[in-house]
Amino acid sequence: MKLTWFARTAIRIHIGGEILVADPDAAPHSVDPRELVSGADRVFALASDEPGLPAADPNRWRPRPKRAPIDATVERPAVELFSIGRRAVLADAPGEPPLALLAGSEPPRFGRWAEGGVVVLFGAREGLIATGTVLLDVAQPRLLALAAEEGDVETAIAELAEHLDGTGLVSLEPGMALEV
Image (cartoon, rainbow, N blue to C red; front, side, top):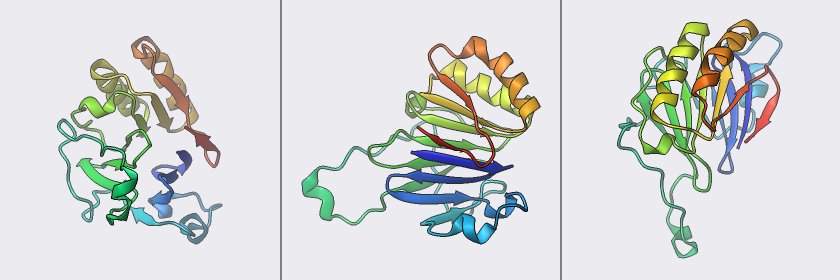
C-alpha cells in the first residue's frame, strides 16, 4: 500500500493492484488534477459524502478472506470501497490491511477490523485529537497517519502519544509517498 497526500482530502492510494484517488480537485494549484487522476481505477469523494459507495456498518464489517487460487476465476473487484459514516471511507483489498480514510468530525464505530488496520485522519487539530483518541481507546491499528497542517499535526502527536500502545503514528507530508 502506498499513500500520497496532497492537501486537504486529496490523496492518491496504490492498494491491491489498483489506484484510488480521493478529491483530486482539493489538491493545490501546483498539482494538475488531470495528472493526479491519470491511471486511476477509481475516483471518489471524501470531502463530501460519496453517494456511489455502498454503506457498511463499521462495527460489524469484516475484511474479505484471501482468495484461494481456485476462486481466482470469480469476477470481483480487487479493491472494494465502502462508506462507513459521514465523510468516512473504508477500502478492502485482499492481502492488504483494511484502510480507513476519515475526514469527518464524527468518528465511526470501530470494529475488530481496526486492529491491525491503517487509518488516515484528515482535518484540523481538535478533530485529529478527538477522532484519534476515540480510535486508540477502542483499537490499536497498525498505523495512524495524520493528514493536516504541520502545526495541527505537532499538537495532535503530542496529545495522542500517550494512547498509542504499539500503534505507529506518522505525519503525511504533502506530495511525499508513504509505503505501508
